[in-house]
Image (cartoon, rainbow, N blue to C red):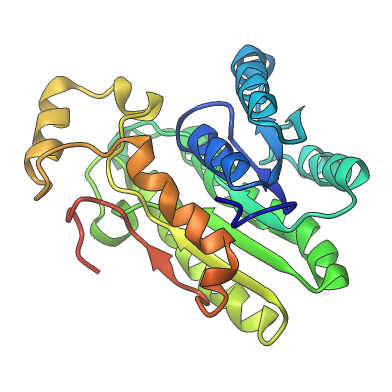
Length: 251
């Protein structure tokens, strides 16, 4: 407890799933948290997460923004800095999931996946980095996926975005160099969140049976990797990708 005491964390896509779990875990470690949700339909979920964090006793704020849109991403970062004075930790977690084979995938479906899952990582990092340089401190953690390494039929757009996040993080790590800022990834395996609820049961069973642990991860299995990378214990982790995936991919 207290590993993130008084740090300010901005977590995109944090009204549910892994993002919500990370927000709660960070709050328990003492961080002040800016929650983000994409649309009005998520406002109730975001309010519930905010109430949960306030019950823990930390300062928090929930901001609606589609972080794949330049104006929204800029406004989110500006709101966070205006209210908290700094941003110590950025978690690029916003993401969507859907499936289609390449020949059936409409260009708009590809473009939306790349925008939400990849462009948002660039935009939020782009707007947060000057703040981190000025304060000479920062931790940037982006959510990739074990599918970045193994691929999956019907998920080429998703896998492409997640693989690009890893390459982006490695390249960013060379740019930030010797500064007191680190950039790393977490690549979760199949996790019990809303993103997988709509999958065909046969596909779900095929995924589960291929995992050496024999089960989907829970959010609680995933969030410790984020807490570690956000903490000063991970100060020498640079351009790395931690993958809590039950053995689905062994890196």
